[in-house]
Image (cartoon, rainbow, N blue to C red; front, top):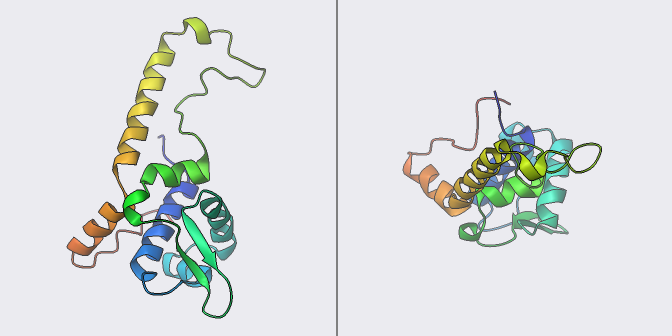
Length: 150
């Protein structure tokens, strides 16, 4: 089975939690980690990457914590995945451990992997954090931020 890593899943969960609870004031990373059952140390790693990407911003001092770095309508699931995982690729076509793949120039299968990766990117980019929040609010308070695997 192919699946996105815990970085992507946990980062999106944390952002949903932040967006749902951080509209009025910053939310502490510890509170977000506890609410989502994510290790505070792991959350710190994710937040460094999300902050570097401008997705969140930290507020220092008493009452400090984190806020979204931009409007939820301008943060896509694809932005989150790229911030914590890097570029989205389904196969390492074009690059190998020993340099450029010797088959890259004439590999027909590469077209399939590139097309599938583009489709995945387009789909992830089509879901904004605002859309996810709207869905969360319309499901009678169902906790959409929690996935099955912790």
